[in-house]
Amino acid sequence: MNCIKYGFCALSALLCLAACDGGVRDTLGLDKKAPDEFRVVSRPPLSVPEEFYLYPPDEAKERGVQPMKDAAKKALFESGNAYDYTQHYKTDAPRGKVETALAPVGASDLPTVSERTFLTKLGASKADPAIRKTLEEEAKQASPEKMSVLDRLQAPIMDGETVVDAQKERKRLIENKQKGRAVNDGAVPEKKEQINPVLDWLF
Image (cartoon, rainbow, N blue to C red):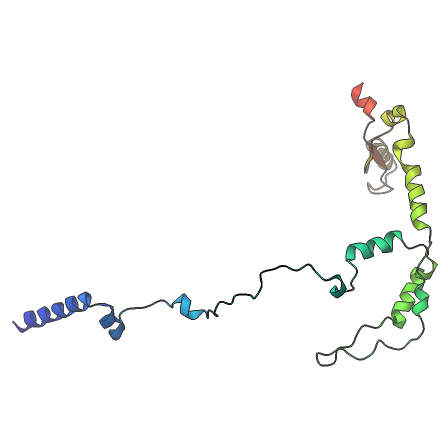
């Protein structure tokens, strides 16, 4: 009888807890709440600007920095003479102190001994000032525009890959076998494939 009584009381208590509102469940720790996103993130008060007008940019206040596109164009097309790198070779002193967060040091324009030696071996001070004109003339001479239409059709379209010449290789293997030599004795004959001209494809 006592077991039935205790069981009935426990079941009644569970039903009461299930019917309780959120306040009792929160007190007993039975309910979990997700954090409120509006309280987690601080929301500063809204401010209205004094004026809503857009003023044109002041050219006098613009930074005196040349755009990269203009600087590259000037370096390519407006350089009349070759740049003389030796004009900076005035001292062999090191670049300066080590740059730190408290005392930043600007990069020096003076090259080190290693850089000077490297540029000297490259011949940087002996650059051809008319190299662009020379390359342009060579490109015009090698251009197929000077060829006639018939020459273009008869000429190979392009050179292919280097492959083994089968006939000469067969002859070399037979000679090595007759003379008792090793198979790999001698150089392997090679040839360069060529794609047939347009006329060979048509006829």
